[in-house]
Length: 179
Image (cartoon, helix red, strand yellow):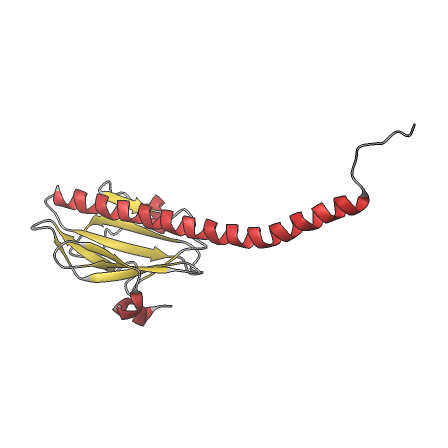
């Protein structure tokens, strides 16, 4: 009587390995794209929460606030800071150099993935993107772009205190200064 051994032949092992390689060839780029999209949407949500927090802080204060954006020279790092607006730009705080700040009345936003997601606006530090007025919840009209490799969103400030996020940014004036 002959004895049979259970096992796989070399051809079967190579076939299974080639199927796994082909599946990973298609799955890895899709996973990377989905990961980038998830990171972008998470950053959008975090930025929305920050802007709502700024508006709430302004609504409960008796002073005007300014929103300032700082970008590093190599455009790899960026941040936003909301602080009490001054008549002169002498006491402004740069969020990329927080160690030099002595102000306690500020809110700072740092993105989680700065290299993949960029902030584009007309005004960078020491000029304000917009000013929040504590009376009647109003602000100066302004906008800025949040941009990744595959997607961009326009954050628009209306004068009546609302922030609108526009995915269809082709009609936006923000695209005129895209860099």
